[in-house]
Image (cartoon, rainbow, N blue to C red; front, side, top):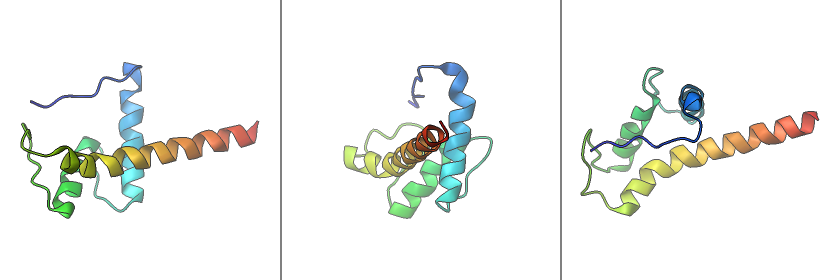
Length: 90
């Protein structure tokens, strides 16, 4: 069963998806503008992890982390960079 992460401000979903697409493109991945979440399949394939659409309950926590870590980690780094840039302007 696929599960969407619930964000605090639902109206921000579009911008978060755009940030994910921009960050992962900068990392050299092919990212769909209509569904940037699909980049996880490219990462899984690159790492040799058998991620499939739908239920993936047989994946270990380690495998799931290896897929999601680069995505979330790079998004956080970019948000910190953007915040530092804004603070420097003040």
